[in-house]
Image (cartoon, rainbow, N blue to C red; front, side, top):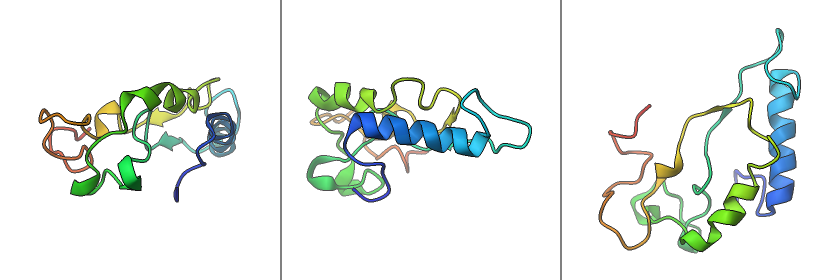
Length: 112
């Protein structure tokens, strides 16, 4: 699980909160000498089946919905409440559907 805070939701939440507070200068939001913080990925983006990255065609299927509650816990306790989101739940398509033909990271209709 490279480029993540790990698979433990509680630890991920604590590390995410510290990351945001460190850049922004406070746990209460952006300070005068802080740096605006952007949280790149949100709930549900996590590791895909077999560990494939959703940035690639073969990793376009999201993890089954049963894991969503665990993914949500990582964003709990206000860990990212003062950070700016950039990528939504729609980063990858749900398993076994044809509704979204491309991974969200290259879908021209997902661009912010």
